[in-house]
Image 1 (cartoon, rainbow, N blue to C red):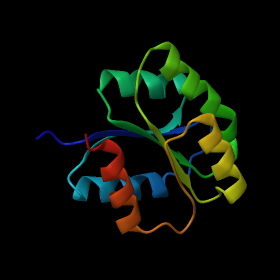
Image 2: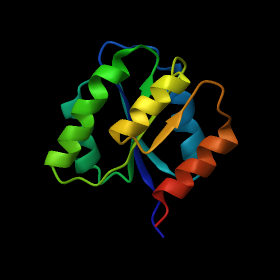
Image 3: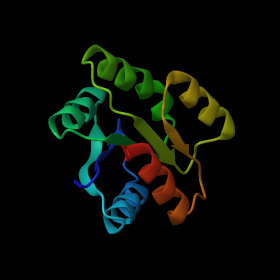
Image 4: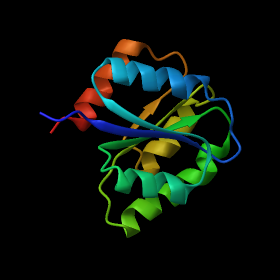
Length: 130
């Protein structure tokens, strides 16, 4: 059985990557393969990497408001490329209202502030297990 492949990155000018690095480590320790793209990504670079890496999910780490601006573009690019890759969003400033907006856009999972390691692993495993 192959390891789940998760692409993780941050879009726009958000440069607070401590959370993305921590989640990457959590997922790797849970047996998943993580391709970490780092900061300053564009919707195009995120989607290109997701497709190129045959990702089972794309994770967007958010610590600024920009995720609401960039998410429609990411989802549209995945759709136009016929890439059936679920998108997961998590970050320190996501509110319940933002969670609802993201889910309405089509985001597969949203992790709000304070989510624990075990919940991240459990939900990610359920998302990427076929």
